[in-house]
Length: 186
Image (cartoon, rainbow, N blue to C red; front, side):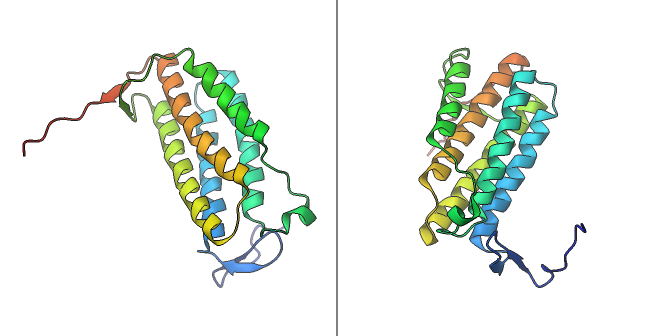
């Protein structure tokens, strides 16, 4: 199988249903941003972190492929193609993992500046890409309905990445720098 097909040479691409849309279509932007996020999760997995987190991130990467497939399919056509779903249970797993990590973390009293360790910074980059994906999917949802579980999952995933950044800061003994606003003279 050849990687190149030349079918996109005129700035269009095909959805799962075969319908061609411009490469700048919000649906393409949405699942393209999920693909970018998935690449960052792979980068985090490649770091020197405990195996538990690597395994959990691998599960998330599989779910992001599912999410991408959902977004690459027109509404009301996904049943015919037997595309997996994102479930309330998938969201609950993220919440349970965040609760587990939060139980081990100091209470957060301020916003935290991204950084402190390369791995932690990768988590924050992934979090911001996830937030961008959420904005794109929200915009798509205004044009064509997106399953509510997709929106909730992406929202929870960005929260998970923030908590993971905090947890890895703790485990890697990286300093969390609090954002403390300075007063501005008026």
